[in-house]
Image (cartoon, rainbow, N blue to C red; front, side):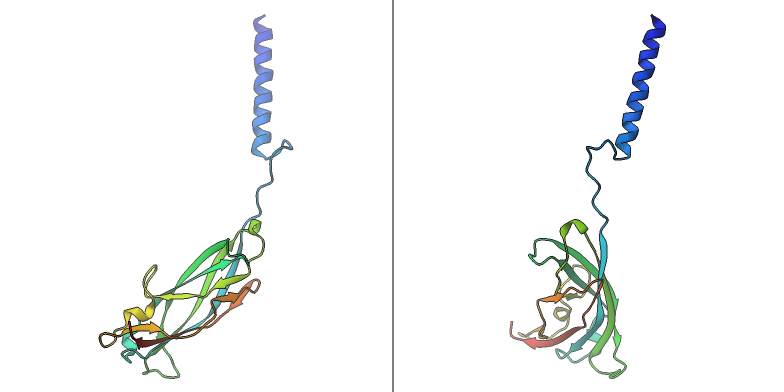
Length: 175
């Protein structure tokens, strides 16, 4: 009788181990397949910051953060991306109130979300999560420095890499 009980316990153990092994492999026929891995998409280009607020190159930060979201057409799926960019004098105007740089932002798009449609207009900040880069530049009171460059609200998505140059025109305006 003890041998029969031991044999039944051994068979039950083998069946349990086999079930665990099948579950770990995602088999068994009842499980869902894992979602496909995300795809890396990029937006890249040049950035040019012009300072017409106080007219000094030194007032433009040496580093800026650029943030943009990759979004679907409906705008209900957004994947954020950001990068820090070093800015330096423009060789075409080395002493002018201008700094330039290049940037690349990568966003990991979830395949289950369908196709991305556009990037949001890039924000240029004085530091990660900071304020707009022009806000860091002084103006005579009571005026404030703002980016007066016009640009699209979205940048059309191009697979796999979108090209987009950014122009920031800092000028003093009324508050």
